[in-house]
Length: 479
Image (tube, helix red, strand yellow):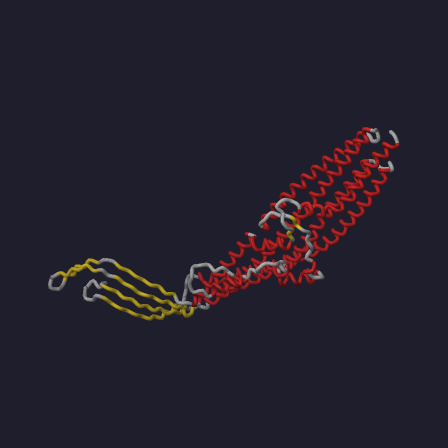
């Protein structure tokens, strides 16, 4: 083989390797630019904008809001125990009468009786059952708000995870495409060198194997991207377009682990909600004990009856009455006592549950903190690996041009760089998701702390709309 031919082949192969080495560090940037040029993509969408969509339109979150609005009605129903109960009654019919008089004569008539009346019942004392029921309902509402906050955190965390998954998979697909392009160029160069006798046939087979592997890796990345896009649409509500890089939520996080655990103890919605569940269980004991107390009430009645006297001596009667009632329980077979014991066991269960939830929340906060710190280290290590792999590839390329390295060694070095890039993409995803996971473990992954540009859903608004409502069948908007 001539010196000129060898120099031309080495120049071609060296240019291919160097071109890929210079292009590959810009993989993520090129991926985002390519996505921005896709048809139908009008503008970039950031992570906060995606979270706003999830906050407003996620069906799981909206269903939990509707559930809480239903729980609000428990307070209105409990307050009804303080109010009078008014009923109106009306009856009518026909009565055929045939009376035998003392003088053996008969008296017959066809009566058309009817009765109309209004009855008012007012409970004056029922063993503090009404007040305990109201307080229990209020505790249930507060617990429901914490449950809503927990669902909101879960939805926002799912949104952040789905966003980063799509972003990472988009970058990985673009990286795999560039990898396939580079390997095909390498294969073409190796085949050219084979024709002039510069490399053995095994070099071509090795390059072909790497192209096949890279093609399979590209297919796997495209499948993963399609799955992540479907998950994104499920959580956010729309298919992803051009997503911009997201930053970790470090500015919202505490500086020390002990501080993070202390915040979680105060603000984690599962802990706060469990304390309100404990309050509700305490009031349930009082409700059960009310059955042991006497009850006092008053009843007022106004009625008019017409043609109800079968003796035919009275045509109509007007009546008004006010009656007081006092009931003192003596013995009910042990039902009330059993209900009290049952409520006390439920209270003990809630206390144990609160202790368990506290431990779980502390464990979750600790695990999230450690994972977040580990993600920082992992990202730094991945960046260092990429830099070192890039330097190694550059050196192997130069040595290959000088005839000191084989095609296989270049392919191996390039594969190391590709794997390092993939790990870097994954580390960047883990870094962001870990910060949002820690924020969720603290109980601060919400619209306020994230400063999302969205109207706030305030459950207090609907609560006030229905709390003192005496009537009405239409559901308030809650706005």
